[in-house]
Length: 146
Image (cartoon, rainbow, N blue to C red; front, side, top):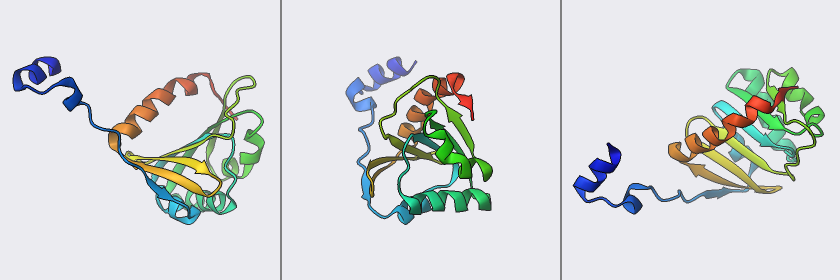
């Protein structure tokens, strides 16, 4: 149906696929915390910035956000405070390596990627957020609740 519609209107496949959104860059962890809302998914094994960690805990405790984390067995103990505050921590099986990765999905349209200890690329795109969530769904099938 979509292909027929595209062909009859003269739209090429290249025109139908939206361009990747351009990220904005943040260097203030408090600004990143202010972007968190609704359902928040943290993926990674390293969330080194204390300001960010404290901000996530405060939002979780206040009920502003619901937090799920997908991490490694080695990193899970460092997320004990988040778990005590009501967050869900899922651990990948075996010795899965994430190599310090840190990715955040916030609400229905925000993808945040850590690019350094104090820098984040922020993508505002419902389509991108949906695609990332969809690609991660399978991991929760194998991950175990910590």
